Length: 477
Ligand code: ATP
Ligand code: MG
Ligand code: MG
Ligand code: MG
Image 1 (cartoon, rainbow, N blue to C red):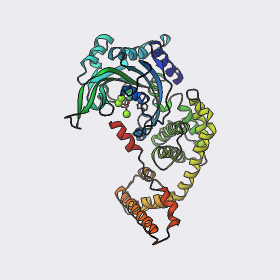
Image 2: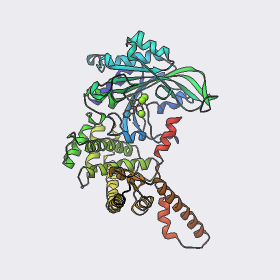
Image 3: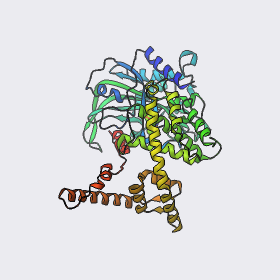
Image 4: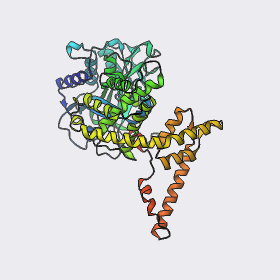
């Protein structure tokens, strides 16, 4: 079943059950705590928090999501994209656990002729929160899942909360057993590669607020109106229904891998693990970059712009490491626009802009690479020659300061060479530089020296990657 069909069946299933279809919001919302929309419920937050009254009791959407937190998993696990589509159904004080579980189960297991995905029931493993007897009873007694396929999990996996004070509640997740080729038996508790998580059902039933818990908060009591928030990963379901190994080989991603193989002359899946990871990184990041530019992000030195810059640069490096030197970005971006615009028509409308931005970054990064790669190679060689495994903070600083190598590029290149980097030393030098810049600025103000020629460098500022921190703080609320 093609991705487009999977999306449409989801929406049809819930529209039929009285839900209003809400189009995906932009990846960029006006929320200072959130770098990118990272879940289907984000645009509905004001309803869940009681700040606005929803115009419907039930809604369904397929929301564009970006999770930079997952960037290091990309291409290595079989299931983490930086961009993915989260399909969801939402109840605002309307139906609750029983219906939410029933809706999910029928969509997954109904036959294809009947509008479902036709997944075999005995491949599905639900989890419930430690004390959620109610959800377990529904799964076991009403849906008929054998007790041994229902696992109970703790706070980290099966409890969800939003803001404080704010709604919270247990969740129930649905995993699909990919079989012994993918790992150990024993359910999701034992192995989350073999048992791939496809759907999370959140039961918002309580309010959390200041109290005596470990983090200074506790559950204060039940919400006046209970809500449902669910999220199903479209790419993960596509991976299962298309019988492919991972989320990068589905109908919308595999063409990018194939194109990368043609452009680099290397084969995918030919037994070289590192190469295969690079192919998957290209497929993932080219997609995310295209969608981000389509939603108004431009490459920059911090925040969202830096995430985009990093994604584009990782595409360029992966292509290089696969052995191609010529520019390829335009081909990748055009292909993503072709494959994704049936769902997101704004991409086709903005094709020229998106391609131009991505190509511009490719060109400037190619210059950076050309300038700094020799110094990096020398530093790596000197490190090895002195039987060391750590590139000095000095070298990392010079690469940053003189050649524009962001520290994560140096870290990545070092890791590829089997080396680490003295990050403490690097950070100390950065701090010193900041101090010097401050002192210079003061001197300039007081007329002690004319340093205006350095202004441009100062304006550029240090390239600190704040993306993870911002996302981490979002994940914590
Ligand atoms: P995992 O444990 O596999 O990282 P998660 O628990 O972080 O997933 P949720 O936050 O519960 O995921 O999101 C709801 C659904 O969205 C998941 O069940 C999954 O199907 C999908 N999903 C989450 N993260 C990703 C991702 N990085 N790439 C593709 N799909 C994802
Ligand atoms: Mg996750
Ligand atoms: Mg999970
Ligand atoms: Mg989950």
